[in-house]
Image (cartoon, rainbow, N blue to C red):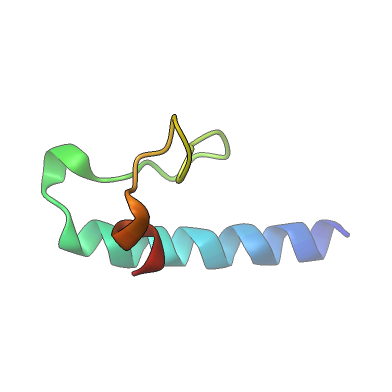
Length: 51
């Protein structure tokens, strides 16, 4: 299970790197386990999440 969790986190962080390339520096996402990507506390709108 730990390997699966690490694989998922690596994949998500890779996607965050790609999204961050498109965002201004002040809007870039942090790669932390407690960073909300979606929802009321999320940092991405629906289009940002899909990209």
